[in-house]
Image (cartoon, rainbow, N blue to C red; front, side):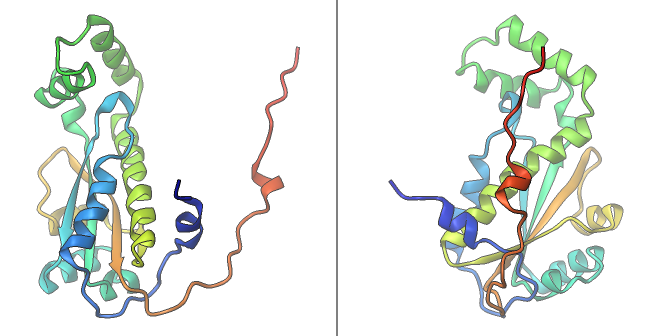
Length: 204
């Protein structure tokens, strides 16, 4: 069985990309990694917008404050959170719950569970968090294919939504810059294992 850890360890945030294009085959595989990411209730509250033309990339990069990864990457993947679609009575939710139920009738218990969750959760924050699962899988897949990424979470949300022509009820969750990195991976400076691993101790 192939070990995933080398690809995860090899992933790093590329700060500047070369001009080399990403092949359609590589891009499709990376997008597929995002499509199959896990999500609560099987909602998959995302869509992935590939920003490829120079003009569109320039507008999106401007909304990302012209950070170098955004301006130098040959393409960007904007991960869009489908916030309004998550309303319990929406056609989208009914379709997703139906898929979660295996294509048959949706059990009342599942409908009630989702409605109860929705009434107590912040749908916007939850949807954005779910999008990060997809982003993580796409970044790992890209690394395994010899490509580099940089997740960009710093942007002017309204400007980026305008640049991407997003409808009301959809918000940009994250932008992935994708391409071939101009620099080699630097030294890892992660916390030591003992700083982030903990065994829960039950107290009576």
